[in-house]
Amino acid sequence: MNYNKKTVTDIDVKGKKVLLRCDFNVPMAKDGSGVITDDKRIRAALPTIQYLLDNGAAVIACSHMGKPKGEWKPELSLKPVAVRLSELLGQEVIMASDIIGEDAKAKAAALKPGQILLLENLRYDKGETKNDPDFAKALADLAGADGVYVSDAFGTVHRAHASTAGVAAYLPAVSGFLIQKELEIIGGALAAPKRPLVAILGGSKVSSKIGVINNLLEIADTISLLEADWEDYANEMVKKAADKGVKLLLPVDTVAADAFAPDANTQVVTAGEIPDGWQGLDIGPKTIELYKAAVADAGTVIWNGPMGVFEFDKFAVGTKAVAEALSKTSAITIIGGGDSAAAVQQLGYAEKMTHISTGGGASLEFMEGKELPGVAALLDK
Image (cartoon, rainbow, N blue to C red; front, side, top):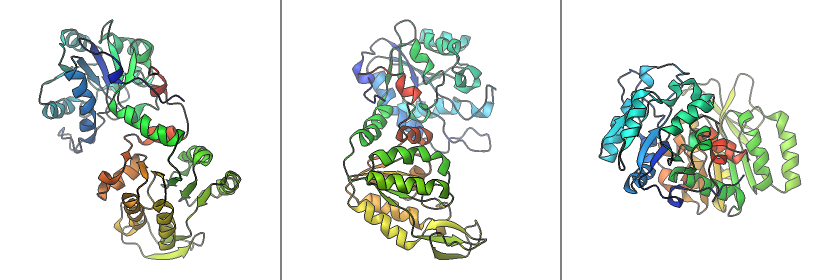
């Protein structure tokens, strides 16, 4: 897949209307008060928005929020996002009361360079997730005949939706700064990594990582794996790793618990010897040292998935140790979104990482070598 895509800096946006796909799918307070509990994703979109406004574009921003499945659920409205974005930009964000209806059309038509409009939740319309061409065309039409489409929601590029892929059939499509950074850093690490390339794969959903492991076996030098129930794949992977000359590091010891609970009784056992009725909830001290050593002299490290149940302090030791080791290495460190990103942020090591991906599923599919529809739709440089 070609990662060398045109970005906002490769085109002239002056006087043009830009349909900008953002990721404003932010966590909201559960009480329906409309309070945003973490505005990180809104802040992440600011550089691209500010660039477009400063360069004379009229910005029509759009995003999904949650999974309303085509129903207008008031608690999933983007109105609170418009309010927060206004505060961060220091200018009014005009809010449309619909997506491609009369209000959105009128407000988009009246939009002047330097102004920004936010459409209502894209997924209020079933046409978004179905990648309905009529819905995609109606979205594109808001930007007018000489409009431009800018994609900056990396977390959604692995899905072929109307706003991530479909609109590119009707408007010239380029990436914003967020996607550009993901493509340069992760794409670069996959295409021409600074070696040795070490991949650390954890988490509980092994099925979602098989493709990643297979792809990384082609390019990595060392892979550290944590997984309890992957025996079926183990022998095949071990053989493939040996054939490719990849060092495959499996846990040598495990912190076992007698219950899935923060205050469970624990014991350190040799890998593969977890007693009946117990379960492995973290990597053991010998495995921690093994993984730390692998990271110490790496050129590039890709980390996806925590080492244990890091939500419980007692079982966050392995995850903390890996995060700390990454904060001290001189390697290029890439955190593949999702739980690993949350862990690194929670532990205070975010500033020390080269790159924390903004997409969980998208970064996994990227590392798998799969074509991402929302990236394939962009114009090549």
